[in-house]
Amino acid sequence: MIKELAPAFAVVDLRLDDGDGLQVVEHIRQRRDDCRVVMLTGYGNIATAVAAVKAGAIDYLSKPADADDVEKALLAKPGERPDPPENPMSADRVRWEHIQRVYELCDHNVSETARRLGMHRRTLQRILAKRAPR
Image (cartoon, rainbow, N blue to C red; front, side, top):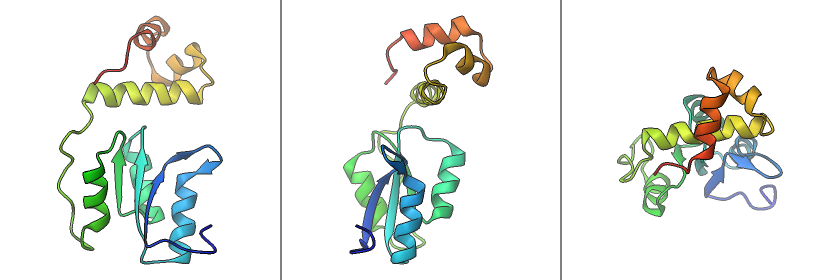
């Protein structure tokens, strides 16, 4: 689709069923250098934020992102930074999202996830058994 009609604005998810959102951003920017791309993710961290900006995204927002925040990011003038989000994720929610991401990447293997996160397996099991914080 990008080859046929490169958009002026795009909102791209970092994780896609059939690929990587970073590659989509790169392809869009190759076809249309002035395209304003906002990257969305449920697994926000500094490394992926830096990668998104290097790929050409103008902003990086964690889900659930408010529509107003996405609009502000897309319509901000070049060099101008939009106001911070009204309702950012809590630190507990960010931690929970990170644990869930690593758990998913480890194919739901609790022992491997605990090892990679540097925590005790039982502690991880208790965290996974709880509901997501707000």
